[in-house]
Image 1: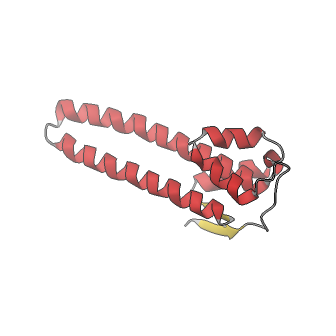
Image 2: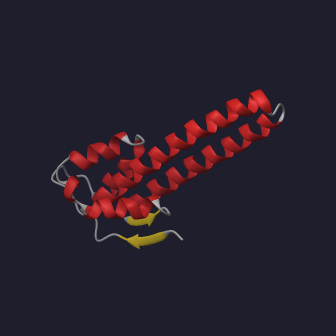
Length: 131
């Protein structure tokens, strides 16, 4: 089950950006902003921002892997399954829609100073953020 925690009071970094805004921005440009916040001061030492940066990166890696595997299934399906490839395409579209809605939900949670752990990915992100 996904775990949800409230973060401590929103802190402002030296740039004046609040912790919750930095957490939201970690998700904004897929994995790129996650990496940026892992190297920027003072956010690279902030556990809340680090968690969201790592979760964003790991979620997008999972999405890329899914996309590669799913596109191969679709191509093989077009060649061998005939009409069933249409059903697989629709399923793929629904999965991508679910990823998009999860992405929006995670940005919302980060903005509200909440740490929402995605199963498996969230635990890995929490371990990395604690280092």
